[in-house]
Length: 228
Image 1: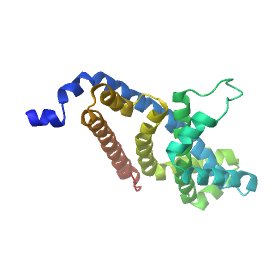
Image 2 (image 1 turned 180 degrees about the horizontal axis):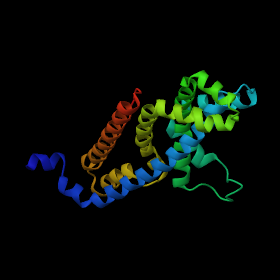
Image 3 (image 1 turned 90 degrees about the vertical axis):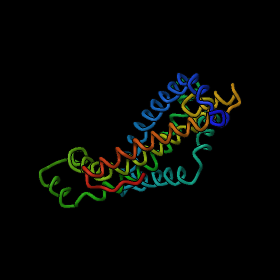
Image 4 (image 1 turned 120 degrees about the horizontal axis):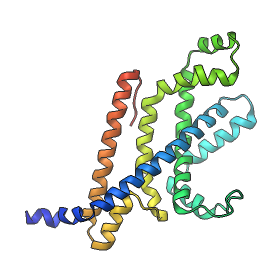
């Protein structure tokens, strides 16, 4: 058993389990808030990109291209370090707020493309039928188009959500404590990279396996295709 302890000292890991649990909780919280932001923003951007008004679709297209062509880590640094104080807040964003905002903006660009594909998959006849009964644009989107769109792309959205959860580890670079931060804590205090980073990797693997299972269930129930 000595060789196992030399490679991976599980006794040390056991001492830090409360820190890993705390980091996992923060990862879940950060990912949840960022997911809400990304879905809301993604839906808005998807509708803007489908508009015939160039003042709507051009800024939306520019946002998507800008996000997809730059690394997430750079986006986190830009939002946290270079964006001036917001007038409504009267202060700079703290580490947690900046990290969540960056994750939400990044995932929102990818969510928007998925949602746009879902909207375009809704049969034109159903939209015309909603128009014929006097539904407004907002009512058509709320009751006819968006429910079907989200249903058709739900597995793909879940796959993107798993990517968002993994990307949340990058907020540790601006000082946010989460799951990867727990691994850094073990390394900094004990100089044991295997115990810190392998434990974090195992946790992310379990999270990904869970999301893959959820995606598979959604795929079977909705008949969609999942990309995780």
